[in-house]
Length: 358
Image (cartoon, rainbow, N blue to C red):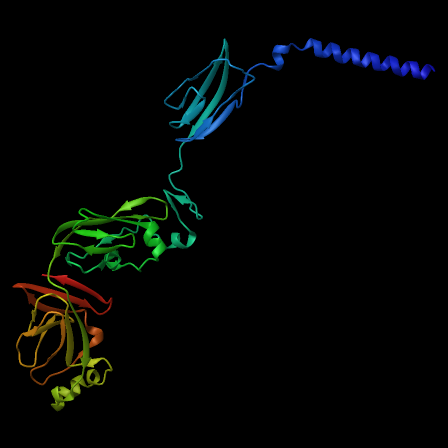
């Protein structure tokens, strides 16, 4: 019985102690306003929202001790402005709540790891195709374009005097932005293919993304679009020993060239004229190895090709001589006239690129 009474007495004493402790804590201490953070760290341009807790329908006045370092709006949104330290104050009635703010310098370079660069999501595979900040890109052509003849502008993008490797389509779209000063003269699609629309002069340029995530600008190329018809050509090479100089001394000096698999001493040039009018192809065909050589037609006469037709023209030595090697050719040139205007088409065997000139 004594144990039972003793247990009841102890329980009553414990409850009384709890009641007294609770009564000793003022109700205002439990509901006192306080900030969601007492200290925050931001980078320049970064934002963070502060909140005042335990406040209902009370007006909060926000302020910054140094607005040059960080600002705060009426909703408690803090914005880092420049590197430094300041204090954000929230005034509730007569009480001031303070939050220390440290603003650090923003990152200027970011590692991609497939992250967002500008508005482009760059994969690791594409990032490998991007140039470094020091690998400046240059647009080296084309200075002359023909109406209706599309040109792949990536064929003319160079770095350190060499044409760059053609990027993947994804890299073309996400790593390059092309600009034409007049889209009615030359329009450029997202893959860098330029389509000349009409005669005129235009400026072409591009922006490219480097591996640091910075967009850089190329040079500006001044290009001209001319209307020289729709003309193209292909070349095949041949070796006719009847045209060789078989003099023993001459033959001895040139024998290694005669036996080369790419030796030639005449060419067949197939010219296709898809224009609406006839053209006159020059009696001389240009071949540039070290210097330029003009190879004549068999009868040394210009050749007429009617509209919407093709013709194969023979060019070669008019007298017996030596041979040339295909691997030594830098470019060839076909000259023709259309509607009284002269035009020239260069062909670069190494790259397979055709260029129009006037």
